[in-house]
Length: 296
Image (cartoon, rainbow, N blue to C red):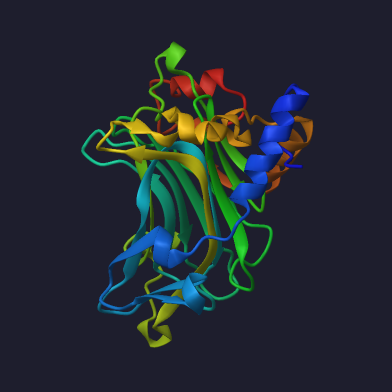
């Protein structure tokens, strides 16, 4: 079972969670699940919808978005990042609503010189406000094989996971005046683009276009989530016909003891930046959530 399962769920609920988990394990199909939205044929789907690639050259990057919008859920994607000298490139995997007061939950993978580690950049926006960055080095080479990157988003917390290991938690502290992204439906987006003005060593290392095209690969997209219907103004989790979704594990998940230990390990050994310890950036005092939430 997942390291995030709550030990307090009743036996009847556990059975329904298992059923939902088995349903969610079915492989997605990119033809059915996403639209390639830009890149002029640089984004491609292969293997009958089981594999998707994005590419970047000196003229353009590429990107895709989910056909559905979601209001709370767990989103999983297996990714293999750009190999070799990927300096200057950024591969993204994120949820976002629309508009100036948008909500957003970000994974961004900042490219590197060959032999240097990728930087995993995370951020949470609520009501158009971000500035909640945490960055990590991974404990493996993300270009050699596919690894699973997940966003678990429920009404109580957001958990960022890598291969089901939690690397970050952002708790719902609306009661303390901290906006939390729980009211605007969000769509999944992913892109591969050039950001050599800031991505690698603050922009000191530029993209080497002799290495182009750069390619990132995707498979096994899963969305165990509440699908939003703009026409009804409600999500599938409010529908009687899909009531089983309300019993999905992600709606109740929190870190158990094992999860908390793994989070501490990641943050002690692999975190390279945490806005909650950046006193120079916040001379008037750290943000409220930094003071009130232990696992951020």
